[in-house]
Image 1: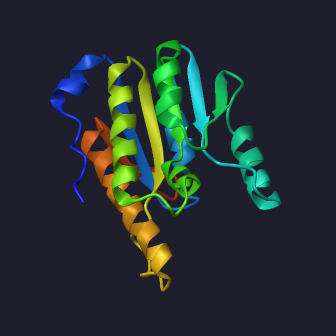
Image 2: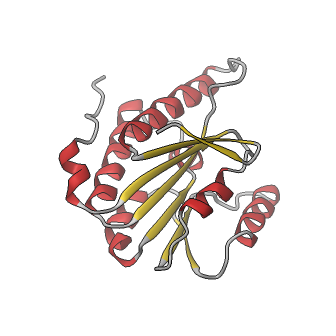
Length: 185
């Protein structure tokens, strides 16, 4: 399968915005770091990809909501991130997408690697057309044991490729451990 081309420097110059990537393990403090990095005096949007599919996830989403002030406009966008960004990026100075790993999960296991990477490339293109600061949050899944189940290994590997594509395009990349952010780029 061919891999989508990385967004070019030309795409980076189309808009005046910036792209920040925040990566870390589960419950590492990524969302809190993203909220700090996304802070601005202007209008702000928080794109939540999580879905309330069960009681535990509903409680997790409620806990996340409680950490955001009312100045953040929250939109629940489980799948169509590119469409939302394209239609709304001009309305905001700062946008947080939290998180790409849940978004990938929402796409389901029927999507191919090529389909996912094309969607990520499309998302990066529409982000680069705008003037907003966009902070993308994602999980780093590759630092643990190799999963036994083939479908879990596939998800981990696809997540890693997705994260590499975003990190390559980002202006800044942070890795979060125990609430502490280390800037890589």
